[in-house]
Each structure stands twice: as C-alpha cells, then as structure tokens.
Picture 1 (cartoon, rainbow, N blue to C red):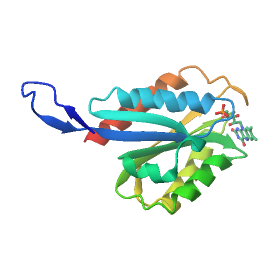
Picture 2 (picture 1 turned 120 degrees about the vertical axis):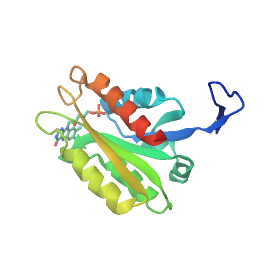
Picture 3 (picture 1 turned 90 degrees about the vertical axis):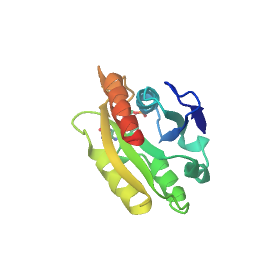
Length: 167
Ligand SMILES: Cc1cc2nc3c(=O)[nH]c(=O)nc-3n(C[C@H](O)[C@H](O)[C@H](O)COP(=O)(O)O)c2cc1C
C-alpha cells in the first residue's frame, strides 16, 4: 500500500510497511498483549499492523506482510498447540525475507520458557522469518489478569519492533 509522504515534498510517495500479529489465547490475556504490541507498532509512522487469532487468517495471506509476529500462552511449559499447528500449516507457504518476533504469556517463574521453544520452532519451520525480538508477559493466575505494566511494556516492545521495520 502507498501513502502520501508528509513534509516539504507532498508528492513524495513512501512505501507503507505491513506487519501482522497472529496469536492464540484462551482467556484473552495474550490477546491483550498482541493488541498492545500492535498499538506500539502502529505508533511508528510508515508502519501498519493488524492482529488476528490463529483461526482468523489463512496461512497463504502471510505472504502479504513484511513482518510476522507470533504469540501464545505457555501451556505445559511450551507454546500452545493451536499456534504450533498454525506454524505447521504455514511451513508449506514459502515465506521469504520477513522479519519477525515471538511472545508468550506465563504464570509464576516461567518467564521466556514457552517463547524460547516457540523461537526454535519458528527457526526450524519458517526459515524465511528472521527473528528480531522476544517478549514474555506475566499473568497473575491461570485466567489472568495480566501483571501490572505488562501491557505498557508490550506497547514499548511494539514501538521498538516497528522502528526496526523501517530501518
Ligand atoms: C492447559 C494449561 C496449561 C498451562 N501450563 C502452564 C505452564 O506450564 N507454565 C505456565 O507458566 N503457565 C501455564 N499455564 C497458564 C497459562 O500460561 C495462562 O493461562 C495464560 O498465560 C493465559 O493466557 P490467555 O489468557 O491468553 O489464555 C497453563 C494454562 C493452561 C490452560
């Protein structure tokens, strides 16, 4: 998509970078983190981000995006199965030259546990995505809510990721 460049030369046209966040969530805490990351990305001029649950997008449509972010809850010390299955389906789509990031939500002391495994799965199955960031958000119990500040941190993470997309 093209947008009109702002500034002195109004005829300058700038290429809009597109990002998508695909997430899985049972109690909607990971959904909130996905939306906060998206808000952060959308604060960066020249970048637009959409958020979809795994069942809401066909894997072929991933080709339309410059950046793909994948996130889910920690289920039994690993990434939630619905997201792993989505990645399996995406593995037959030839994704090339994308940047990406991954994130999880967790309880207790399990920061980064599921997202580290998710990274390994992405690297193995979607080698066309170069991972540029990882985020892990704490929930205060199985159903949530999110711990204080996690949405604000997620938004900041999104902003930093969005900057990488226009570099
Ligand atoms: C079946 C199941 C297994 C879980 N196993 C773990 C676990 O091993 N480690 C952990 O930190 N949290 C575990 N949790 C808690 C989830 O991480 C928590 O429910 C999730 O972060 C909430 O996100 P959501 O609202 O997006 O579903 C588990 C939750 C469920 C439902």
